[in-house]
Amino acid sequence: MPNLEIIITSSAEKDMQNIFDFIASDNVTKALEIIDEFEKKIETIAMFPNMGFRKSYFVERDVRECIVAKHYQIIYYVKDDILYIQRILTGYENFFHN
Image 1 (cartoon, rainbow, N blue to C red):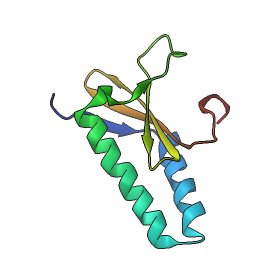
Image 2 (cartoon, rainbow, N blue to C red):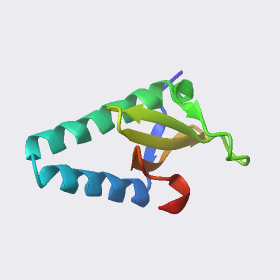
Image 3 (tube, helix red, strand yellow):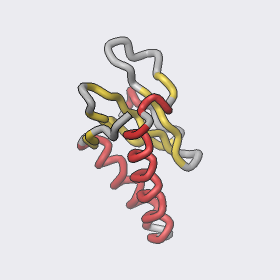
Image 4 (tube, rainbow, N blue to C red):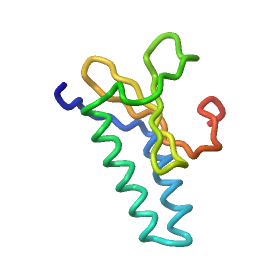
């Protein structure tokens, strides 16, 4: 399957910035590493969009979750050959309450 166009929503951008800021307050190098991991995983998802776990509580579209570095979740869906990165959450956050 060809690579999909990638759109990272403003919510997901904010999520990444918040994660970066939190980690960077203790270790900037680690913060840069986790952002790099997010970017690599998003590229992999663009090549293999069905790799994530389907979130069954979304009826209107095939929303999926992919785990990154044990503690983070990338929430995404594909529509019309575009990969939409909806959120990037820590393991203890809930998609519906953010």
